[in-house]
Length: 252
Image (cartoon, rainbow, N blue to C red; front, side, top):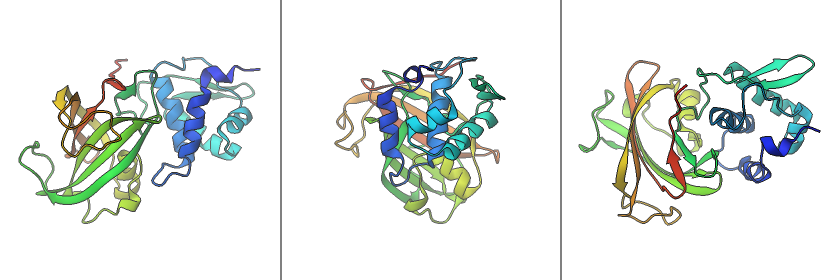
């Protein structure tokens, strides 16, 4: 029998199952495809490696075969797997992959880690003077979130989205992937980003779940992101716990 445990560790699968019906969670087939995509991009699944059978994978993930096939089709469209008739699905690494988390550069120290998020606050306000100039509106939507890698609190995020994209954003439409929310609800998507990585004190709005206290030094990432419309629509800053996560940029 195909050694499935090497492809998808049991603890990772158990964690994933707990997120299926979590409020704000991505559709199950996207969660599955993102899990596989991140493992491919991290080199944990190698080019030419055969995935378990569809029936075995569906059983292991506790999902319907039809849902599993939707996940595999998404991976095929990204160029990450190839389906060979009568043989199965094989890993086909591609530098052109554009999965939901392809621009998410933080990974757990023990492995890639599937990102999830908890929204702390969302408000529309005038852009403060201590962030770069971006977008066309004087106001922006400010998202503050706690990000998890698998089940571990790893990152505090503050994301500023230009106010020109909408008048109001309902918290109910905000999924665990903001980039997925941008595309599914506002009709644009992020195509490139520029990151600046350094260290910075944890902000005073940090939450108890995060391993570091306000004022503690943390890894720090500032990002400007461009949309398919051609303009800069997002600025973000993230504080990550270096005992839990690391910033990874892979060059292919």
